[in-house]
Amino acid sequence: MAVNNNNQNQAKKKMITLMVVWTLLGIVFTVVLAIVQPFGIHGVKGALSVGWHLPNFLMLCTILWYFGRGPLKEHLVKRRASLAEAIAEAERQRVEAEDRRQEYREKLERIGEEVAGLKKAMHEEAEREKERILAAAREEAQRIRNEAEFTAGQELSKARAALREEAAALTVELAEKLVRQVINDQDQERILRDYLERVELKS
Image (cartoon, rainbow, N blue to C red; front, side, top):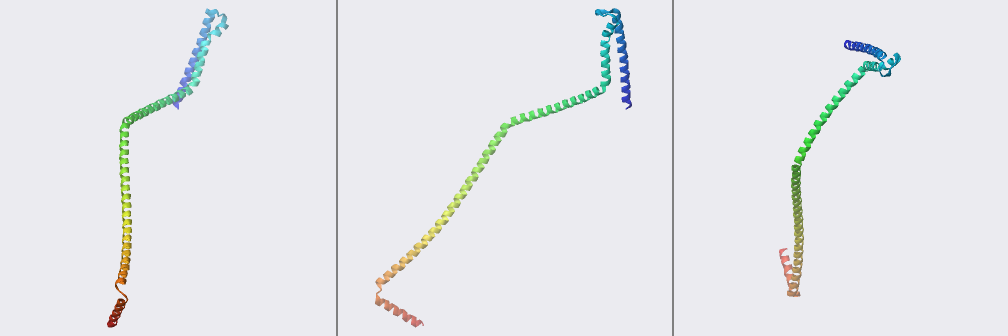
């Protein structure tokens, strides 16, 4: 706080000193112009109108400096900080861009190997899928073959049983025909009597 007040006092002294100097300069210019009267200047009035242009401008600059030095300094400090931040951000983005460029360059260099690896992986996957499909087809064919053999075996067994039944029926029928042809009514009666006698003897 004391340092700030000291700075303000020094600035105020500088401004007063400069204002005095510019005032003296204006008086000197006016006197010189009134005496010499160059460029068609006549009298004190003409000397005053011409001689105070530069001192007035210098006084205005001094007043602007005194009252505007704080905001101007603050603005310049902020501007400097923002420029430094912008430069740092630009440097950071430049480094990031350089890193990305290097990364993309490495990726481009590796892209051939990656494509070859992808082709190889796809080929191997296609081969595995082919083997899986073939294995599934073989299993399905074997299952169908087994079912067909089982069904054919059952049908064959049924056919054999039907043939045996038919053969047995034909044999019985043939035997009956033979018996009818060989044995007459008298033989039948004799066989019946013999059978009944054997049954009576057993009882």
